[in-house]
Length: 127
Image (cartoon, rainbow, N blue to C red; front, side):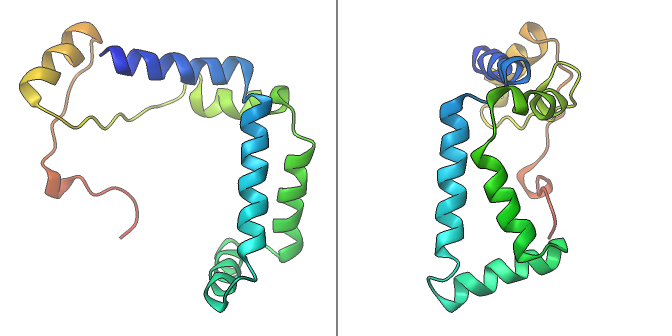
């Protein structure tokens, strides 16, 4: 429960203050790195162009997103962070561990209604 409360505080902080300048810089560095690996091998290029094709983007669109990161400020990130991390945002928590230990914490300390799922039924995303 304490770890979940800590994560929740971080999410709410992001929703209030946005990403830090350091976090934005790290995102830019990652985006530049990904962009630069595009020509590393045929496989990298194929992955890049497949991703563009699947999203309906052009190379110019992808480059524009990368360039937009250069001028991004922490306050620019607040509206998006608030949408996804704010107090009113929906959340699905996936907690893995010993049921006997976790269930009382989640129910009593956090007031959550817990639904336990067997591992075989816990497939998330597209197959």
